[in-house]
Length: 229
Image (cartoon, rainbow, N blue to C red; front, side, top):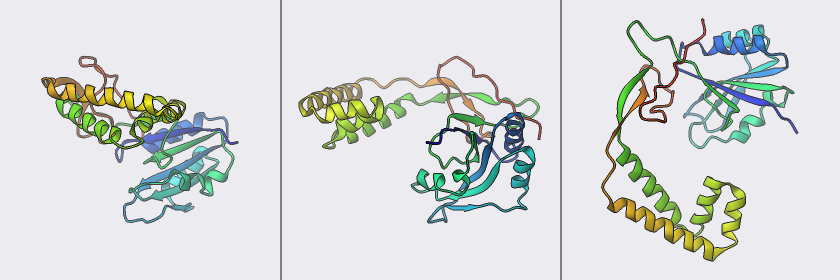
């Protein structure tokens, strides 16, 4: 069984993602694979390539990457298995670095590289968050799921994990009781007054891809700095 860390490096064009990957490779003491990944809605199937003359591929190799590749995958319903079956991933490594989009579906470490703010610009700005709209959308999604025949066990599986989902699936009376209580609770929330909007910290529009409002209404997140290109 191959066990290795997966690091996903994201950020807008020109922010310094490749420079950050080079810094990771320089600090690494084991074989590391690097893939430059991107969604392509025109593709029907994923595509792997490893052009020797590609500038970023050359930078990866010069920085110490054990093997490199470019991986393009369709944006509609990407299949992580296709990435794990690439020639790149057949190599032994202690770590895998993904720059750009993430075809693996998860990562042990998520890194967002932001360009340095301009003079007088801040990475985070104050915004109003429509809590009522988020609550309605969540309630509608839960209602749709819970009204399916296997909805309660599926919900428990997604939220609490497969073992609890299997337990609920094997106890239909318990599942029906839990579903009725949840639907009643959702209906009660719907009938109550909608929550007021809250002010939160959000990322400026010039830094696409980074999460929006952060947890905590009044807590300002730490800033993110880009490495030198």
